[in-house]
Amino acid sequence: VLPTADSKEEAAAEGEEQEEQAEAVEEPVRSQTVLVEQVPPAVAPPQVEEKREKRPLIFTHSVHAGETLWDIAQAYGITVDTILSANDLRDPNRIRVGQNLRIPSVKGVLHRVSTGESLWEIADRYKISIDEIAEANSIKDPGRIKPNDEIVIPGATRLMPRDVLLVNGQLQRAFDWPVKGRISSPFGPRWGRMHNGLDIAVGTGTSVRAAADGRVTFAGWNGGYGYLVILDHGNGIETRYAHNSRLNVKVGQRVDRGQVICFSGNTGVSTGPHLHFEIRYRNKPVNPQTYLR
Image (cartoon, rainbow, N blue to C red; front, side):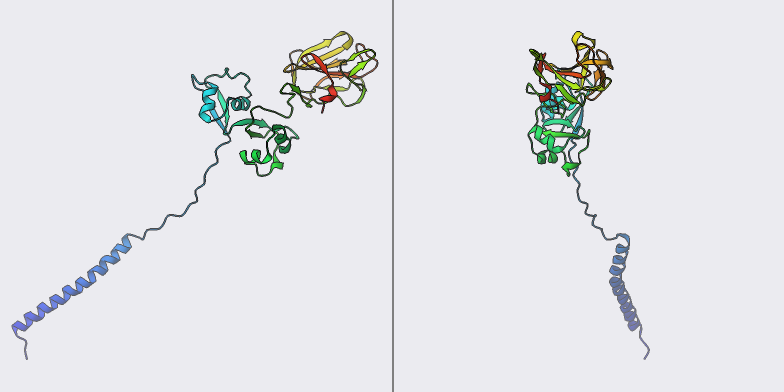
């Protein structure tokens, strides 16, 4: 049977409808495929652990016009004494515009470690626990501090270095022996009069060393003392070195602890080669053996 015109039209219409349905089914698939290719899936950002930097132990502050140490101390939440000790300042009123000041991040003083000094010794001197010092300075091993390390002593109000000679008006056992030898005559009454120093028997020409840092205020001949050196250590403290054969310093010169300042001898009123050594506080002689270490 041959198809009629009406049946052909119906078949064509049915075919078109099937094609439209097929396209309608395929279109979402093609669209979804293209979307996946063009926009890759979002990748979660890597989880990075936040690292908090520790607050610096020492800040640097440049002095501005009109600023005082009190202003600066208040701004940083510390004391004026903390700033004075950290910068070796003696007069809180003498700072200048543009001057860089070291500012510890905690209230306390900045202590420089001396040769041979331990954290236990430092803690004992400042009357503070080792743990407090270690925590304030992030010190993991208290036994591994080195000379010239700078550490903050939290809560301290004044600097107490190892070589401090005077604390609260009291002389300290902080003087080095100027020479090593036998004590031939101690401090005290002798031959009906006061012997103001310590006689140490050593051969002529023995190096005599400064008992502490100081400034030379006398270097020359002085009657019964013979050739004499006098050192001023500040705060009314001086040391005297007498009967020398030769001098190695001049008046006004700054000397360091342990520096050779003269050579022993037998000059002046002397019964034999030796060094006569004195410590005086406010011009009053004291027993050197009490303060030599």
